[in-house]
Structure formats: C-alpha cells, structure tokens
Amino acid sequence: MRAKTGPSSTPAWGSESSPRSRPSASTRRKRRRAWIAPPAEGRRSGSLRGVRIGIHVGHWEGRPHDVAELAVEAERAGFDSVWTSETWGSDGAVLLAWIAAHTDRIGLGAGVLQMPARSPAAAAMAALTLDHLSEGRFRLGLGVSGPQVAEGWHGDPFEGPIARTREYVDIVRSVLRREAPVTAPGPNYPLPLPGGAGKALKPNVRPL
Image 1 (cartoon, rainbow, N blue to C red):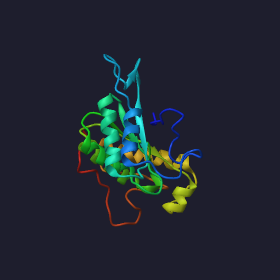
Image 2 (cartoon, rainbow, N blue to C red):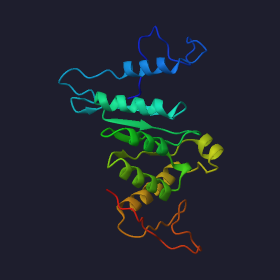
Image 3 (cartoon, rainbow, N blue to C red):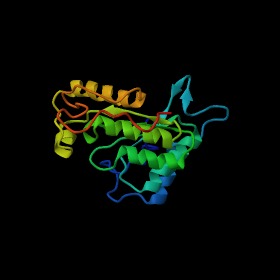
C-alpha cells in the first residue's frame, strides 16, 4: 500500500494545487508519521483479517535518512513489508540494503527490479545477498519495465517481453535452487555463452 497524503486541505507536494516550494525536512517527517499511525490497542496495523499490508516507498529521490525513517516507522506500526522500485535513477536493490540495515523485522520487497538492468544471474546474486543481509526478509519481484527504460536507458531490446520473462525467471530460479551449474539454451540469455571460454557455474552463496 503506497503511503498517502493526509487531509485534502494539505495537498501533496508536486500536485497542481500545491505551492512550488518543497516542504521542509521537518514537515515531511511529521507527515510521514501521520501517514503511518500506530495501530489500535490489541490490533496489528499490518494485517486485516488475513490481509497483509505493506508500504511502497517508490524510487528514492530524497535524503537516505528520510526513507530509512519511514521504514522504521512502518515497522514500528506493524506493517508487513516495505517495497522499493526503480526507473532510471536510484537502484532498488541497494535501497533495500540500506533499509535492511535500519530495520529488524519488516519484510523487504523489490517491486520491481528491472530485468533489463541486470542479467538473470546478477538479479539472482542480488536476491541471495539481500536475503542474507536481511536474515530472510527479502522478497524478489521482477519486471520487464517498458521500451523507454529498456531501450532508452539500458540499451536492451524490449521485443518479446513474455518469452524473455519466462527465460529470465527460469534462470533466476535455477540459481536460487543451487542444485547444479546453471545452463540455459537461450535465445536471449544463453548460459554459458556459446563459443565462449567460460563454463557453467552455480553460486558460491547458499540460499537461506
């Protein structure tokens, strides 16, 4: 669940009716605390009749302590998870590592890591690392993004996104299972590279 603004009389920064100047850091912190109100006595705010509620901090554009403080407040209020995303600026996996260092219990979700930004093996490596750093709290989400990000930012073809996703996810799962050296026939992500000098490998980090 994305954090929302408070009363309608206080427009969100950047909306058409808001002033041009950005609110002070103190004001932003107060608003964040208002967004994440403590749960009523005897009731956990992160669950509602079996429904798990998370908070999405989006892609980071502010100060690192702002997002860390928001995650800490969400954990204190009983939220189930905190999620990040990425476009063509901040890295979603790195931001989750920062949040992991400031929290103890809340789940950490990538919603989503861009497939064009990383090879399948690199995405699996990030997932393994984050899962260990967070002691099992990490949740991996993957997405194809869109032509602007895939081709305009990463220089990666966007054509055939469904087939690429299937192939990508199969490799990630093979890495995370760690049952044998990872091989894949392609055509988008052949492993090992046909005609290359490298051989098939399996990760030297064990999944939790």
